[in-house]
Length: 284
Image (tube, rainbow, N blue to C red):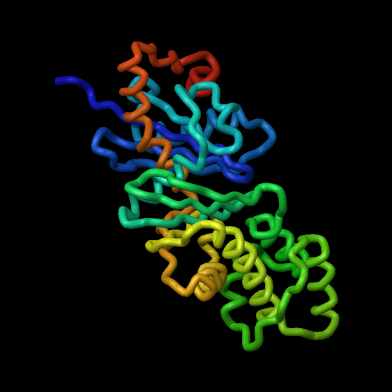
């Protein structure tokens, strides 16, 4: 009996690196994440090896590795690189087959995707301004002296949403300091912060034809107040995966068998990835 093969995806994002392993039937069996630091190559190795350990697999069990994310070129053991847009589209469609629009809010960028039959059709992206990204929320949390993960719950207690007129992160921070000095309640200020990020994201995706089902992914999707604000502004339900951080890595792992078959049909040898750098970490 031939040995089962598994496929891996790794998403090296601006703030977090995520790895996923899928079996031959397209089931995601393991997901692992770690913070992205300055040493991209080392972190990619360590996260992937942790995924192997949790799955009870070795390098020889992996048939193909796809790297995605803004740091995908820094994954030395990957067989190929695919843009995060394509991987997110596949990852979203795997969980929500009827998905027509995906919104991904990451640490440093935000993306809107139009999806049809599991494939990317069109997209729009904000990667030049912190407003509308996880970084915006992180900086607002620092200004307010609260933990990032507390923001959503506190915001839901708001009685009167405060308007944050500045979308520039630096000016928004100054505006929040002024609101605090005026004695405005923290929940009301946070409701305004979440409304501001939702407005920015919805304006971005409005250049696409938003089609249901709408799916929100990325770490910011864990913030209930952001989900509620985007839902209100779009005027339609917004679906959130149980683990929205892993959509890109899942998509990369699910695309790996297809990429392996494509390489084989062209007579291209699968790169020998059981190498030096990764094996060194495995044996240490």
